[in-house]
Length: 492
Image: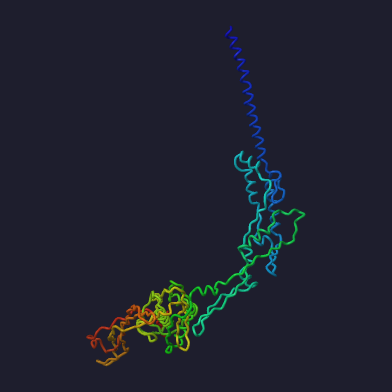
């Protein structure tokens, strides 16, 4: 009996103890549910947090889409605001939009998105911490203004830049004509000038003035690309070499071709270490002037062709380069001697096969001057090498190659009869040396080349093969490529 009563008492005590716990748990659960409902209602708002302004315009409490559309409409209006660009006494009327300025919601739009994205807790924090004041954002693209104030416009308003010029008189004295500076828009500082003139707030209805914003465009003085200083820095101080060849026996077409190439190289400069490439010169001359018909060398003979005479320019330039002490990179003699330079001192050209190149191994720029006058081609090189250094060129024939006979059949000749159709020519092996002198004293003798000019056979017609069966065979003709021209042979 006593035990039963004690049990009942314990049971009533435990129930009284558990009841408050249950009540507490239920209360906490109800509170969490309530907080969750409140949070959902809080973050579920589709409005901009109250009190928010963008560039002074009130958008708090507006629906997000409504706020953004309102801003977009205001931005469009602001981009039509008139701008007057002033340059000295010149005025150019544009708008902000035409000037490359555009307004945008910027970070404000991104922050609005955060109000409805992410976890519930992140959205609660995003709305709670949402900034109330937002600045006006603008972007600037220089392209529209650079299209308006382009280089042609600048030149028309402020004049053209004029490069300095190096002149050489008839006595080969060098002088300089100064260039001309001109004002130009200072594009590096222009963007900051524009951005500083932009409004910082969206004007309200009472302040939407259409009075234009005046912007003074910054200018600066621009130097021409070539100045007297840049020309003088090239180190071209005097004539360092000269060579001339005669054109007395040249026909009209050949004279034209020589002059075309001479004009192409006239005025060319070669920096220290630079390589002169004759193939490039010929290509340029052909495109600029074109070449005329004149004899070319083909198979060791002069035949009709196009561009005949161009190797007289390369040979004349070759001799000038030798006398300036420059390094020859590529050069070959003709397949037969030419009349305008000594044997061993010519430089042939065959398009796609043989080129002429030399390197400027001096410490300064090299200027090439070339002209034809009174049937004489003259090439002069200007630069700067020690005045006490001179070069002489000597060539000597080390071997004469005898001409051989070449026989052909001609049945119209009587039996035993013969006829010389082409008179042959001797060939030569020639060695050429460059002699360097300092103060007139020889300090170096260098072998430049050992050139072979093949002999040309005498062509003899005979009645039949038996008449020349015991005669020596004719020498093989040189490789049949077109030298001293760009096309050939042509026969009409």
